[in-house]
Length: 473
Image (spheres, rainbow, N blue to C red):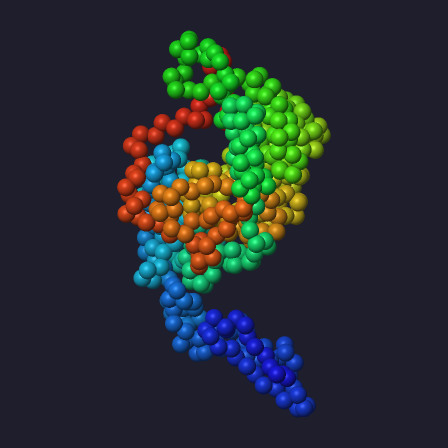
């Protein structure tokens, strides 16, 4: 219609505002003047029009446009579950709006009970009565409220709170969270699977199985991290040093098998599949540099975590020695650990753990920073992240241009029952369920059937050399 102006932002309310302008009139207003006169951005100008919109969750809620009091935080609590021997922690933020709550992942299995205490004994009191809409302010005030920053326990508690607030905001807007972050940049999220085995041949067979399922990226490991099964004689145990359950890693067999592993996978699976590997910081820097150079002929998609956080200074030397792409950051929890390396392009993928750094709010800032230096995202997504946390990863993956790859996980039927609406993987791509918010709920009664163990002696990080020296993961 000539001179017709529609306001798309009002279509949530099943109507549009139309202004008719006589094309013959000498007093025609241009589009900008019309929009100015109807008061775009003016709450007062729209409050009467929008006043009849009924809230719901379910439906779109614009209480701030109608002059209603903002929704406040009523309570913050930890929900725990451990159905497969992996401690999972979820933050539930309940609001003064009946039926409206948000969920966020705060899983830190090495210190699970401590995180639960931080949530229940601290965050609940700190957050009560605050506005659920002010996510940035909530993040900043929580972050500095302990004075000392970036501890993993408090960061995980903060991450659960932050994700839960984004979940609430998405539900209020009646949109998936990725829409609030800018909308989709891709139809699906490319993932990598995990293939291991006791021999290169067994690993290659497992890679082929994942390729048959549609995966185009597979991370290959010679058994567990560091090929612990190849270590034969832990002298420290015979000497009675350390704990009886400490693991033993023999570096030499691990370094010898890696090139053979890559060669076998390329030979059996071809050049189309992208292959990755995680050193997991378990060898010395010069050993890492040498073995990465030896892997160059097999074109790794990336090599992950070659150096421990204490050895970041070796990255410049690594860059001078090889062009193999590097992923780094799983152990980072402070911005000071990634700011300078990203700005110097010292690695190609930033691999931070969203629950470790404090949630969606800081992760989006990291992704935007990395975009300017052509560093891609590869968020950490292991089995000890709840489906809520995997959903948070996925919503960011959809929204950021510089997405690289996402670690995938296959949720059991039990986990999917505890967490209805969990993300899913099909043909090597991860998807979310498109529901408002993060899209994942929790069955609290079922979760409670799998309580956390009273004692937590998780020792997979306790690895020693032959003489008993602890190896830093």
